[in-house]
Image (tube, rainbow, N blue to C red; front, side):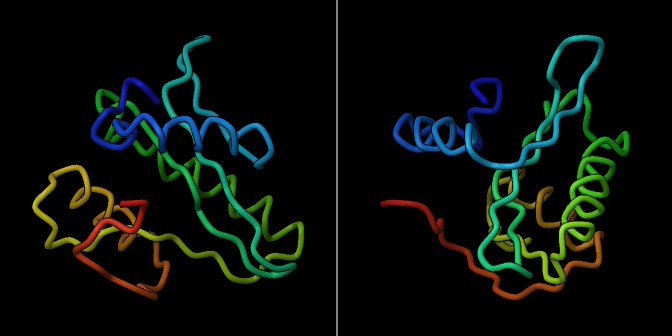
Amino acid sequence: MRELPEWFGIPAMLARYVDELSTLPTWLALDDELVIGFLATKRHTPVASELYVPGLLPHYHRQGIGRRLLTRAEEALRDDGVRLVQAQTLGPSHPSAAHRANARLLCGTGLPAARRTTRNVGPG
């Protein structure tokens, strides 16, 4: 996560995510033994889950790795009875290039845009 400061640069949020990841289902993308990407999900109800904490090193973008992580997570969630998957992100009009890229990725997955915002949704 420290290799992705545009996403995990706030120390308090980084510590929170690290604590939470120890208890959440998490999928990893590896290049040999190097973790290059991850996706953690958070279950909200027996049938609804959130794509909660994703990350992929920029050098590995645009190679289908994020999409494969998402596919594996969706398959596992579906097998476990989940019928609704959601993600929260800033909309494509946000000035951050990283957030725009994330919004494009999510729009390309077919996940519905349940809520779009131009404000950060984390603590304050």
